[in-house]
Length: 129
Image (cartoon, rainbow, N blue to C red; front, side, top):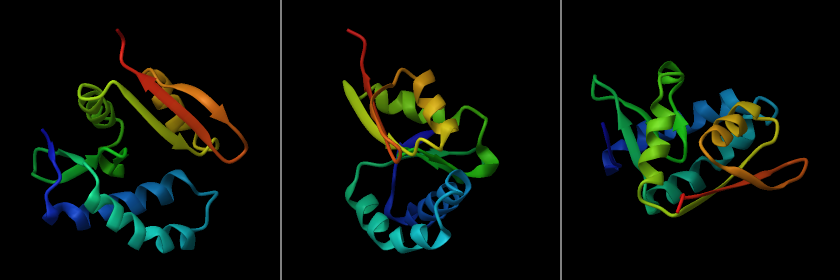
């Protein structure tokens, strides 16, 4: 099930955010991600965030797009992305070029690379007409 984030979800979401970034971006120091926690926590509280709720009522992932490691490769990221694509005509995102798994995931879901350099891949998705 996918639902809008509740205030009580914030700690679980932040745990997923941190662990996902540490897993996916081993080329970036752990301290960097830990230093970003306060700003990301504030931003998430002001954003429109949707959570994927697993059968045990646990947050398995959230759109931004992060999925807890034990729930990866189960289609949750695809479901979250499709959910958001259903409500928007265009989405943009940035990814690290070294995170080839994420870049490939977004390409499979219709995103195109609009700009890339050594530190950033900017991608855009536009709804079919």
